Image (cartoon, protein in one colour):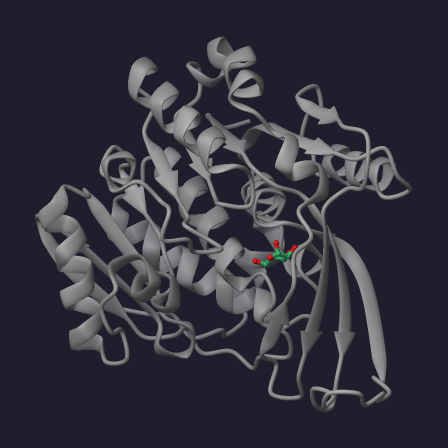
Length: 311
Ligand code: RIB
């Protein structure tokens, strides 16, 4: 097993309907297909990194409903210890998701038990987090808990990756600048900076504003347009890795899980970005969220079989 990644974040049950179009107000339409699976941005990123071989310290909360046991079993099946996946009275997090024929998705999240993950839960695992090489955070848990985790990372000298999803303008930029890696998509970047992110030049300007405020690495996932990285040392733009998409749900989480795995393995940021770009592309060729995440062997076989390499 490789060095540890602490994922302090959400888990959800994804209820995915494959639709032909969104219903109009008051309309009932039939969706041709449905799939249920494990999701949640925290759990997704943890599972992607685990499938690639990273050892994960998962800190999360499930409810006391019919979904909880399945989520715990899923973590265990992916080699993720559930000691710090705590139980909370009430519903687990759930996410109704709609995937259209163009493979694009719309997601509603009901945070449920994720709302109960507290700063005290983070403090409880401080000694174990201090042994990790990276802390990975998203925004599907309370902001005060995210903030406590950033402070813990700072205190014990473990770098932090923050994926500000779903975006909120309440995010404290003094906390953001303590993170080594800040990884929004272009929509989140626009919400957080109040700047446009339509063109690559606009994305660069918005990322520049964050680097100027003190962010070390701003990595912007751009969907079909690839990925953009800016740091004080330079920048890199990668085109989307070629693949035929059937379901893009969780592709951003696949990217972050793989990127995290690669940087704790010692890859440079550009190397890790290239691998993560390909890993996310592989995930969109399959339906489902975590169901679409390849193991290290499956990913190597896919890349080796003629998925074109990227310079
Ligand atoms: O990023 C995709 C994820 O967002 C889904 O798994 C869903 O659960 C929501 O958290």
